[in-house]
Image: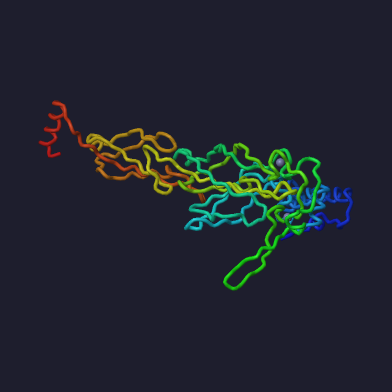
Length: 371
Ligand SMILES: [Zn+2]
Ligand SMILES: [Zn+2]
């Protein structure tokens, strides 16, 4: 899936810096998303192409490595790094996306899915590892869209070498391990015999070049542990155990000499705390209400709590214990689609366990009346 950046900007392979700049301006002007004729995808592509071709080092690497360069994520985090690649997770194959405006690093896009997720190394060579964290929210917070800060210590691009892994001014040299080919041959013994297999060079990650002097801040890894605060938007209606993926907010990726490789994803599993008053059943809420015998017999108007605040509930006269009063749309917002769940008030009529003398008298009167 190599992209032809020259083709995207409409210039020849030997175009001068000036020609590239002009072509970029023209193309960016034409496709700017704010314009009627704008095309955001195209605009991003143009930006990506220009980021690479306007940078001498990046252009050289692109010319040399082409598609492998593309794989490493040319623009990296700089132009977003969000992907909405229809992730299917959970038993119900449920996939949810929510977003904001398109844009730069730090925007919060996520997708949410129930159940587990496939774990394992990222296929994309040089891509950073995925990171998983849990956060706990209250049921009230699960009802509305909530924004939470997550503090994590995470491998991020080394700020000293910008993720390149080299000491400033260090010379580039051909990788000694692989002789510059980016690949090493490994002998693999199987029951069918011994095979030679090419693998990506572990020292240069397939780039073929290393630096004479490694960055002293990160030891050449191009990344260091940093404490980060990440804002995450939790959509209304999220259920306990559901996971939000923030694409590109995981560990920094690393390809020596490239910097800015594709970062892994951050998976946030949301734990919704048990509520002291309400029980959640899907998007519905169950509330147990205890009333007195006289309230049951005569009816009443009482204040009861809901997830949206207190409301006045009318108890009809003659209500039986065990009766359920349904409050429409007082439940939890459906995560997918519109509307809300309901609230079910389960009425329990409490028989008095102790009676005062005067109360006893009244009950004896009622008994005579056949009640
Ligand atoms: Zn460094
Ligand atoms: Zn190598």
